Amino acid sequence: MGTFAKRLSQAAFLVLFGLVPLLDVFRIDVTTGTVYVFRQAVSFSESSVLLLAVVFLVLVFVTLSQWFRRGFCLWICPHNTFSAYLLRLTRWRFLAGHPAVRQTVNLLVAAFFAPVIAFLFLAYFVDPRRLWANLQEGTLDNLLLRIELGFTLFFFVMIAFLRHRFCRYACPYGFLQMVFAAPQAEPGQRPFLRKTNLLLGLLTLSVAAALTFAVFTSTGLELFVTPAATGIPSNGHLTSIYTLTVTNLRNQPRTVRFSYRGIPPTWDVSLPEALRVGPQQSVSHPLTFRVGPSSQGQPAVITVDAILPNGRSRSVTFAVYPQPIRSHGFRLLPRFAPGPL
Image (cartoon, rainbow, N blue to C red; front, side, top):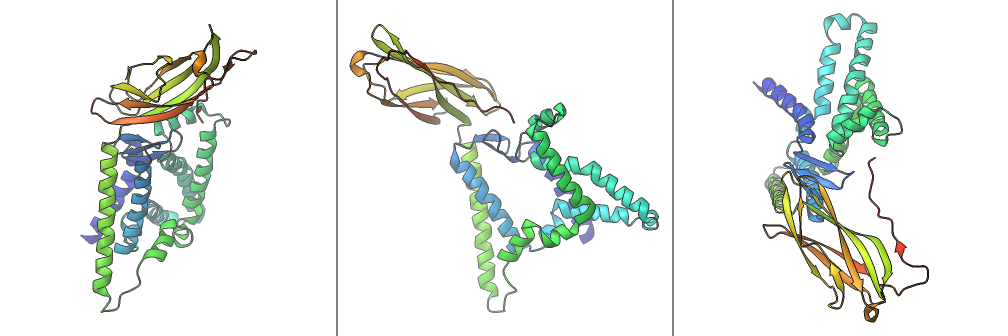
């Protein structure tokens, strides 16, 4: 029964390793600055979520090293499970009697699974749909393709040659387990160590609860203001134009209302009151500030509050500096937008 439960646990966690990023259960998309937890997307700019996610991951592995020691390696670790499957394959009677055939099969299996494992690993840090689309382009000019090839080579070496030697000499969890795992307790120390492990488990659960609460109470919005043009002269006035960009990270459309703080009462402005943003889409709208001669050269720090129907809000602050009219006219400022890797 114990062997069956162990193998069932190994197979389940091996499947979960691939499904978790594909289903957006948990992943940190470094290319878009987004954390996904339970299919809810949260921007890195809501820093508490990213901080809690990192702390939670660290606590999980520390807790596992304290509670289960090498049990993680035997019951959960996908690398150890996959290596054990390959070991059983290469010990098959026919292959064991033909070393050349066994080595050929070993290399073919490694060549087949290395790109799959590399893709699933990268999917924790890049949108798997975007990653797949970039890989289909098949050009070495594509950065994601080069990264995929690099990890494919790494996992090929691990599968074909290292396997359990990686666990023994290079595994980060093995090092963590060695550092944080408590030594064997003396009889008088056991109650104290049990309490320490219990407190560590409760701390991990508390951070998990805080992370879940932060994710489901977050706005799921990204808010940016970028300059488009400043110092445009007209009838003694100066006009500055900025671009407000709102990104909806959720899977349903939402209407975002706006309120503004810090705008001098003498300025003539044209600002949106609300925008409708589709699921996982971005909408941009110009912010226009027209300043008369009496206010020119006096900067203003303006805050835009994006308010959702449920009352949650995000804010962005920027400065508008209406410079005096110059002989060379207005300045066009290029808008920066990060492009795809």
